Length: 205
Length: 132
Image 1 (cartoon, rainbow over the protein chains, first blue to last red):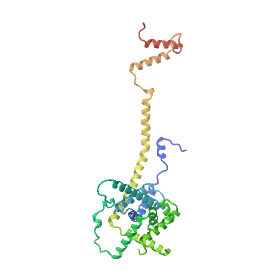
Image 2: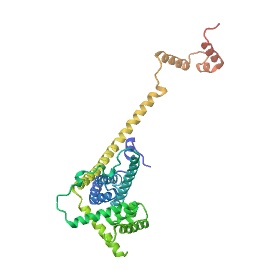
Image 3: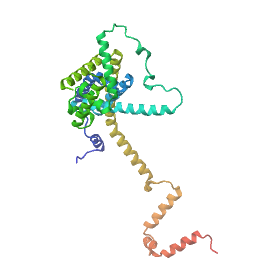
Image 4: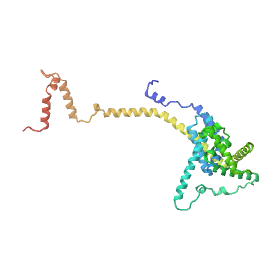
C-alpha cells in the first residue's frame, strides 16, 4: 500500500486509474470521429427501416453516438461497431415500446385516432423533387420500399440479424457480439429472415 | 430455393440499401454531422468537467476536513464556554481548593474522600430549603 506525505497527495492519487494522456485522448477522439462519420448514414437508414420516421431515426442515432462516445470511447476501436449497433438497437426497441404504450393509451382516449407516426410529417416531404426522375432509379426506390416494408414485418431479432449481416456487412462473430447472442442464433435468425423476405417479396422482386 | 438465388437476393438487397444510403438528402446528412459533432463535443465537455473535478476534489476534501475539525473543536466539552463569569470563577476556586495543600492537618483530597454520607446529606439539606 502506497504511503502519502500529505492528505492532498493522497487525494490526487485516490481516483486511480489515472486518465489517459491528452495525446492518446486526442488520438482516439479523432479515430472515433472517423468511425462515426463512416457509419452514421448506414446506421440512420437502418434505424429508419425499423422506425419509419426519419426524425425518430435521427434521435436514436444521435443517442447511440452520445452513449458510445461517453461510455466506450476508450475501448479498442475494433469493439466500437458492435457496441454502437447494440446501443442503436436498444434505442430502437425502447422507442418501439414507447410507441406501443402510447398507441394503447390513445385508444382509450376520446377524439380522432391519428397515426402518431404521421403527425409530425412535414408537408414539404411530399413535394416532388424538381430534378427529373430516372425510371430505373424510381424502380430501385420502389424495390427498396418493398424491402423496407417486409423488413418491418419481420420479428425484431431477424430484422436485426439481416441488417447487420447484409447491410452492414458484419461477420457472424461481430453480429453475435452486437446482438448479444450466440453465433448459432445469428445464423438461425439470418436464415429465417432471408426465407421470410423472399417469400414476402416474391420471385420477381 | 437454390443457394445461387439466395446469394442474388442478398446481393440485390445490399445494393439497394447502399444506393438508398447514397441518396440521402442534404438535410439528413447535415443533421447527422451535427449529431456527430454534438456527441463528440459532449464527450469532450464531459472529460474537461471531469478534469476540473479531479483538480478540485483534493481542495474540497481538505476544506471539508478543516471545517469538520473546527466544528468538533468548538463543540468539544473542553472548550465549551457557555457558563457565566461567576461559574468560571467558582470552578477556579474549586480547583484551587482541591489542589491546595494549606489545609493543615486534613489534606484537601482526603477531605473529598472522607465521608460520602456527609456530602449526600449536605446536598439533600441544600435542596430541601430552610431547616424547620
